[in-house]
Amino acid sequence: MLEDKKIILSEKDIPRHWYNIVADLKPMDPPFNTRTGKIATKEDFLPIFCEDIIDQEMSRERFIEIPEEVVHTYKIWRPSPLIRAKHLEKFLDTPAKIYFKNEGVSPSGSHKSNSAIPQAYYNKKCGVKRIATETGAGQWGSALAMACGFYGMECVVYMVKVSFEQKPYRKILMQVYGASVFSSPSKFTEVGRKVLDTDPSSPGSLGIAISEAIEDVVTHKDTKYALGSVLNHVALHQTVIGIEAKKQMEIIGRYPDIVIACLGGGSNFSGISFPFIMDKINGTHKNLRAIAVEPSACPKLTHGVFAYDYGDSSGFTPAMKMYTLGHSFIPEGTHAGGLRYHGASPIVSAIVKEGLAETAVVKQREVFDAAIKFTKCEGILPAPESAHAIKVAIDEALKAKEEGISKTILFNLSGHGHFDLSAYEHALAGDLGDCDYSKEEVEKNLKFLPEVKL
Image 1: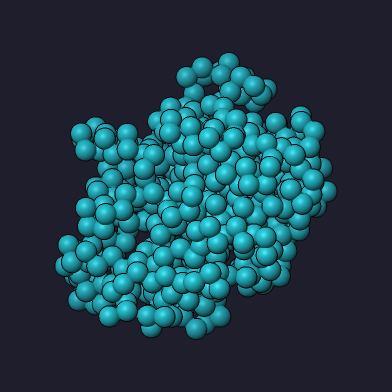
Image 2: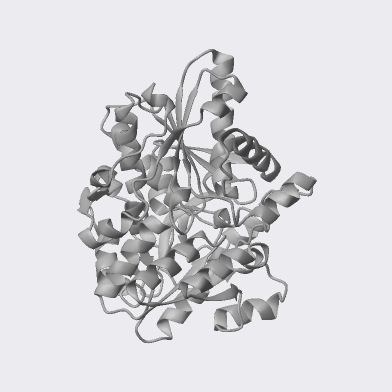
């Protein structure tokens, strides 16, 4: 049967438009400039982002055309395959049908390339010579380094220290692409030096790395910032995943009951789920469940507060309304470094707040157990981040078995784990621990949320 096979589209099926879910949501709380005490404007973002990116960030247009040059570059790996996990289904003895979108086929190894390419393209178009960014586990840094190489721009990456040490081959890949990579907190920025003065052994955080990258931008001419998650334009670019998946599901005559993805800042969850949530909003698939899976070490959607907060640890960015654990919160050094972000995308936060998506929280050891089962069954080694989605997909498939119901489950395999073998080494040796967030630490950090009066 067709549905038993890998569903591969042709180049002509690469989406020509991104889907902007903001057009279908209630008006969201706007970004707020705490320095001026006013709603943030386009001018507030110009020192950081190029103008075309800001226009996309603020757009309420439902479908935004993908530049032909970006489509041409997407052709290197897109469309990505949709695969039925038949061997996993058999192992679980479940009536559920499990499908996954394999984004690990991109040259950089993850879905992050979907936004890195257009961000590099728009910056090059605007005359930018140099881009600075942060990276957690290294997927975003690798993708942007690759994209900058394509467009002949310098790339500077501040990589969270715990991942810098855990994942040396990610660092090397970025350097091969031509990027300069610094362990964050670093001695090269005022932000980094302050953190190191306070805590020389700081493991770093995405919030700190973002602050370092933004400081780099505002102190260097011809430099702009590129972000791998959280903001509207990043979620927009990633929707090529879900748009392709819908077409592939149509080919086999199926529609998912459940769509699942891990959540750090929100980019891959947005990418796989938003085109399907559009159907939930317009009423054609009201019973669709979209599940964002968080690590127990950093569960902002599940245990954070919905409030205005900064996107970085130093408050350089405008404040945004989102679920947050506090911008100064530093989670434990889990191996899923890409999920160690204190806040969730304002769009994802709004969707969860409106009840259009739900959340799940999983622990590190059970995530790696699920990842190893998946690898043995399907032969693909997932990134630790992606394995969070696999864990919940397995849970939902076993629930379907208990209920005797055949459900269709779709999850996003956001990246491969070939650079995460040291983490798997610890998992096989039984050395991995479970990391929970500290309620006391969160309560302390929430006291420092910015005051916003609209």
